[in-house]
Length: 320
Image (tube, rainbow, N blue to C red):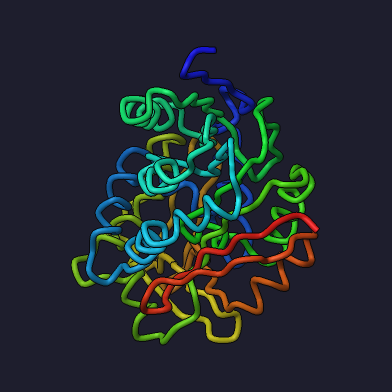
């Protein structure tokens, strides 16, 4: 087998169709809302990489610390021959796992971006020439069919990305993961933890304004892809901590009355002054809550690791 295989379960026009559907539904509802995946065009990905280096943004550093400290423990607990990473992107943090898994033969990165997958594969194969990389262009939120790869399999969902899903969406997602696991397989899940608002809010509203630019980038995506005429200057970036739901919300708030035309959808979107568009939910978790959500999906939490400051957690769970 070739050391690199690329397959696609996401139709070529699926991303464009999903954007049209999400913008139509999200900007005609009240309150207005868009899913955070539309931040991540090339510019948005650059901005997020910059965010991960900001002093206020701790999650990436905290998760990397756990991976470096605990990769051997993950390897010992799983004995994985195949590593599947959902939303793999550049596969940067995963290198710590790949290097620690002595029996690993296959790496299956899953992402909607073909260019991200091929770029990451080139780097990984240069470092691990004996590894077979079977990249999968797919949107894991809408079902996932994995290639025929040997077990035990370790499914990794890192970065705290599960926090971008609402509770009902998380339940559906975890149940879907569980349905695809065989005895001996495991799920490695990254979750950002509840902490003081004074730490959480700056992580999503940094002093340099990089997160604000990242948030507004969704408007640039809609302008480019759908011919819209949003002026990012008409909106201000807002990050709020919802203590009841225990999640951060990122929003764009209209500075003045706005009418934005979206020709590709034959749509005009009206904002009152002060009206907000929610662009991201980022839930924060507690140990017992993670255990309960996993159990509801038929998964048993077996290991729980945090960084030294207790800001972020990696959990390992297995099918019941």
